[in-house]
Amino acid sequence: QELTYHESLPSTQEVAHRLAQEGAVEGHVVIADEQTSGKGRLGRVWHSPIGTSISMSIILRPKVSPQKAPQLTLLAAVAVVRGIEKTTGLQCSIKWPNDILLNGKKIVGILTEMQSEPDYVHSVIIGIGINVNHKREQFSSELREIATSLAIAKGEEVSRAKLMSSVFYELESLYEQYLLEGFDVIKPQWESYAISLGKRIVARTIQGTIEGVAKGITNDGVLLLEDDDQVVHQIYSADIEI
Ligand code: BTN
Image (cartoon, rainbow, N blue to C red; front, side, top):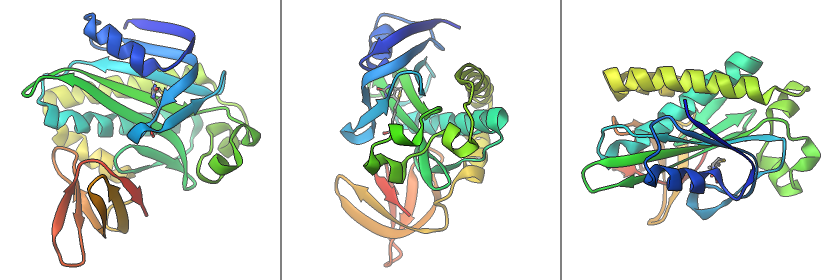
């Protein structure tokens, strides 16, 4: 596995995009000890202060159409939940599409971006940010309400190196499974960790807000939301409130 390590970067995501363009091999990982302008979903900022977080971006080159890229976000979420469970014993859950929660608070963010033509993908960049050793006071008072870290939950520091290698191991085995057998084998694993399914949720999309019951995900990883008129909406990107 090829790896690019930096002590400090604005964002591992940007470097991974550049390396992908320059022809980096599948599986190439960009890691930073600190990000000074980490990118979150929907244009948000992602905080990864020095020494506290795992911040990495992985370059994948699956031979799939761009519509299938969301499947990889879900696959990555399963890998991270497993890696966390194996290294710390803590059980997280997944809020569609890519938030990983512990005790109802966010502990991991995943950002999937791609470079593609209309019919095929050049590369998918999976950015993973894990709150590992943040102390409570390292979160702003606003973030403290909605975010937590593994160390806070466990009451002791967690080895970032061990956790990272465990996440890589899980990611690699799930990705191999995915390439051989498709998303069908990943979907039930994702569903077993999902918290929003069957529940009433509010989805805020760019087109507007839809309220209803989360019915499940499609084979492409799209969320199906049934509103009060029994109309089923396909949600590609949204903020979900449970
Ligand atoms: C989210 O909004 O939940 C997604 C957060 C993704 C953060 C990770 S950290 C590594 C990679 N580099 C970035 O700039 N963002 C992603």
